[in-house]
Structure formats: C-alpha cells, structure tokens
Figure (cartoon, rainbow, N blue to C red):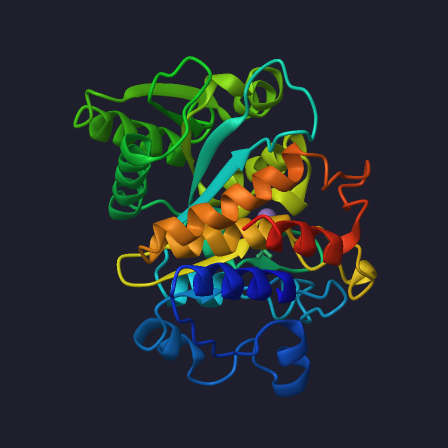
Amino acid sequence: MGSAREVLTAAASMDGLAVEFGEEPGGAATYLETGEPLVAGALERFRDEYDAVLKGPVGLPEVRKPDGTEAGVLGGVLRNGLDTYANVRPVRLLPGIRDSASPIDYVIVRENTEGLYLSRGSGVRNERAASDQLLMTRVGVERIVRFAFETARTRNGAPGDGVRRVTCVDKSNVLRSFAFFRDIFDEIAAEYPDVEADHRYTDAAAHDLVADPGHFDVLVTENFVGDMLSDLGAATAGGLGTCPSGNIGERTAYFEPVHGSAPSIAGQDEANPTSQLLTAAMLLDHVGAIGTAKRITGAVEAAYADGSVRLNPNGTPTCGTKGVTAAVLSRL
Ligand code: IPM
Ligand code: MN
C-alpha cells in the first residue's frame, strides 16, 4: 500500500491532479482491537464521502472465529455492504515475465454478492456434518452477465484471435443453480449480437486457461468459481503479486489486489507491489483519470519490459518492494 500511495501521488501530481487521502482501519488487526472488522461509519464514508477506495490486504490467517472461519475478512462486509456486485479481475502477462505461446490478456468478471459465498456466516456445522448453501437470483445473474458483455464491448485489450467474446463458466451439467445461470446468460447474450457468446464448464475453463489462454476475452462466473479461477489465472501471469482487481457497484467501487496479506514476509521488502500499483491504476481509470491511470500502467510495463523488474520463481521481485517502486516512479 505504501508503494501504491507513493506512485499514485507522484503520477497524479504530474497531471495536476490533487489527491487527498483518508484512512480507514479494517481487517484482522482492527478485529483484534475492537471486535469489529471495520471502524464504525467507514462503510457510509466509502459510499458518501470518498471518490474512490484503495484497499490493501488485511487478513491474518491465525485470527479465527469460533466456527473456524477467518475473522476480520472484509469480503462480505464491503462487497455486500456496498453492493459492489461485479468483481473485475484482469489477467495480463506483463512483458518479460515469461514466454507464452498463447497471449494472456483477459478479464474474469466474478459475481460478488451471491453464489456460494452468500452462505458466509450462515452455513451449518456440527460434529457429524457441515453444509453451506449457494444462492443465485435472476436479478443477480442478469446484472453480472450484462456487466460482462458491457466489459467486452469497452475494454482495452483483446484475446489472441481479436474476437470480442464472453465465456460463461458454469457447472450446468451437474447443478441446477448453474443451469439457471447459464440460461440467463444465453438470454442476455441475445441482446449483444456484436459479442460472441461462449461456454465452458468450470473444470474445462481451468484447463483451457492454462492450455489456451489466448482464447479468452471476458469470462463471467459465480463468486466461488471466480475466486478460484482468478488465482489460477494469476499463476499463469507471474503470480498473485501482478494481478489487480476492482469491486464495482452502481454507486460505489473499491479496488484491491487479488492476493492476500502474506504476513510471513510483511515489512521485509520482499512483496511484489505490482498488483497494488495496477490496482491504483484501475481506480484512477474508474474515476475518469484515464491519463494518470495509463501513466502508471505504462511505467509498470516499461519497468518489466526493460528488465528492471524481474521475479524470483516464488513471485517476489529480485529488486525488492522498494526496487519495484523506484523503477516505476522513475518511468512515470
Ligand atoms: C479474494 C479473497 C477473498 C474472497 C477472501 C479473503 C474473503 O480470496 O478477494 O479473492 O474469497 O473473495
Ligand atoms: Mn481469492
């Protein structure tokens, strides 16, 4: 977050854009202090006062609730609290990371407010069995599918064959809820004759995202499936440290890296800040500071392209967090 704040401030000032920061504590540390995952009033301030929200990773794996789930996780609090129904996760292979026979440049549009994760906090568990429930609603599926088709129409970047397409990723061969999702997808797809409608079962999608990533442009899927596939996609593009995301609603949006907090390397100048930097660029793009967003994305790309930033096999940058920040700052 420190790296992103520095780069965002520098890029904005080059474009004459004044940025005022507020800070809202949240996550596992806040939960340990106060018993709540987010400071009081923050949700309302995110909605009513800030122009944009940049979130850092906030979990601590050992901080658990009695039911065994992680405490201080803000996923449900923010996503359902702000109704940011579209989780937009671009996966793009930056120059110089590795060779790929098939181009990697697609966007996973993950439904963010229902699906299996709506069961968060309300599953049942006893000594002998446990169960969580998946819910899909017509309103929920329609709006995420429309969002995906709009994204295919407007996004920069394209799949290997240049065809604008949305791939519906579901398990409709097994589960009714996914058959419902797919039927609604087909209905909405008819409203977008200029965009190809495509289908993959979740397992085949996982296979093809590795074997033939160049096929994909925009993928739309349920919450839990999108969570898994976005980590898989990140692994093909240099690791979780390179992938940004945005949580978008009608009224509010917040932006965060796809990865978690990695407490074992916190403060050791090891973490890759690239995903948080590209996340800052996504945020700027969303609020209309498109030039400043491009300035940051361009600087990140240049730093990878000329070899100033290289990654170790575990995804950490050889030049450290500060080295990446410096390389990007000097290329803005
Ligand atoms: C993500 C994360 C979250 C999720 C966790 C931390 C709740 O994995 O944003 O992908 O499951 O959605
Ligand atoms: Mn995840």
